[in-house]
Amino acid sequence: MKPLTVVILAAGRGTRMRSATPKLLHDLCGRPLIDWPVAAALHCGAERVVVVVSAKERLLEAALPDGVLIAHQGAPHGTGGAVLAAAEQLERAGTVIVLAGDVPLIGEDLLRELAREHERSGAAATMVTMVLSDPSGYGRVVRDGAGEVERVVETKNAGEASSAELELHEVNTGVFAFQTGALLDVLGSVEPVGEEVYLPAVLPLLRAGGGRVGTLAATDHALLLGVNDRAQLAAVRAEAQRRIHDRHMLAGVTITEPQTTTIDFAVQIAPDTLIEPCTQLRGTTRIGAGAIIGPHSTIIDSLLGDGVRVLHSHLVGAELRAGATVGPFSYLRPDALLRDGAKAGAFVEVKNSDVGAGTKIPHLSYVGDADIGEHTNLGAGTITANYDGHHKHRTTIGDRVRGGVDTSYVAPVSVGDDAWTAAGSVVTGDVPAGALAVARARQRNVERYAERRSDGDGA
Image (cartoon, rainbow, N blue to C red; front, side):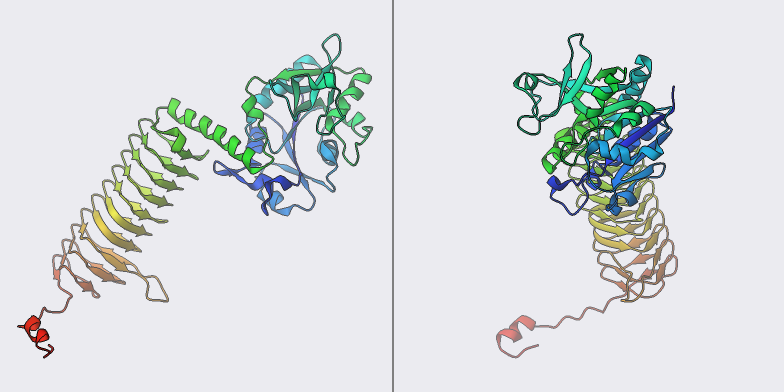
């Protein structure tokens, strides 16, 4: 095949999003809109990918992934003007595919199919078209008596298309493949409409020069859904989620209520895992086999091993190894590590801590900046007081420790293997292995206290 370049048009203003964030940086299932077509272009066999951005739009340019070239469009002079801005980066002897950056679901397969069809047919241009029952808002494809494409007629403004043309149902999707040299030879001759140069206007010029305009019919219309406003973004997100869910379910994952489940594009889930209702799996989360996640759990950028259980909990940047359990109503913050079979029970918060295999933090506890050994049990209400107002300090608790309820460990402090703490203790000094730490005031009972209060004598 001839060298292939993909040009992605991303210089539009996106004013209908009504947002300070550039349209193509809005999130779609865990990655910006622009990343979707760029990824498709990078994986479809293109030798180079060129993204055309506004010369004034630095945020979008900075967000583009490695492996793409950038062309600047000085003023928004339409799709044709955007391609002209990329002209210096095009190879005349090759093929160029042009598509919009706001059509995120297009996918590498369609781009690859378009490139093959274009080269097979020998056409000067090949356009992707759809046949819609309601073509409102789309440019119509006009064919001659022999069925060959003559032109695309726009329909945005009254009077642009005749009544007969408005009855046509084959529409332009805005995705084209061109013989690059033929395109560059005619693009500069296109007459602008107002200040805009429309890319489809090159089609009659290519025909006049002896070239043929071919078509590739898209049967999966959802791949070509565009995003111009937040309502359309929601529609595209729903379609993207459906496809992500199907991919996981066909790979052996059970999602009991897809309609209430959010899974980002990059999430990985092994077979025989169960995702229960109202669960969100975000970012780079990876989940092993046979896990149960949810209901009502949010997992962000976390690594979960085989057989883990997360119930009604929120995890960010955490790691759970095989058989670990969390929840309900617990919060694991970045760098929380629960090793094999460890447990963080109800209303537990863990941050930047290593919790050993088989260790249990049953409920109502905060463990931060701590290293805990294996098969230790911390009682309800355990607190590691890790911050002195200036610095964070670590708590070290050994293997097989039995912590009493309402024990506070004031870091830096170390508790040896097989040690115990008495309920209600505030541990401020190291505890030797096998010792019992009792760090609380002795109980004093005041006799006849209630009677003396009623007599007004006080205590």
